Length: 99
Image (cartoon, rainbow, N blue to C red; front, side, top):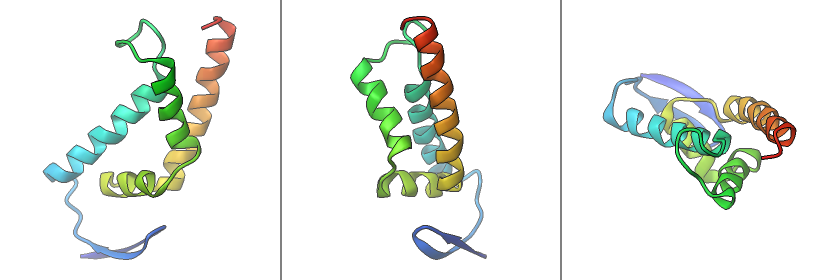
């Protein structure tokens, strides 16, 4: 058992990377990433409003964001930092392509 410090306080955890719960939360996070970075016509369709909501979830995180990251085994601040970079890059591509 290991103690880890998070935005929600100190938590004792047993590292079970392949637990069904961990896999589920990773899938939730992966879906949000795909939605935030999806381009029209690539990998399915997403409405502009849903894409905006997905991006806002990363750019302006709430308690749900922090919990999903932690349950998936990722540090929320690291995820946010990486996604801000990716989202900004995607926005620049969309502007260049007039999407």
